[in-house]
Length: 53
Image 1: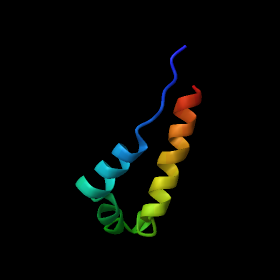
Image 2: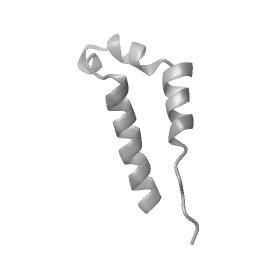
Image 3: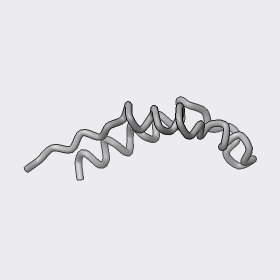
């Protein structure tokens, strides 16, 4: 069975360097406190889940 290793660095690069998602989140009051560390943690946990399914 193949093993999936999510490309976390690539996803982080696109989200932070290309899309600047933290700036977009700051413009939305309900997500204003979302920072880079929170986004990276969510990506990491989603990657762990995806690799186990």
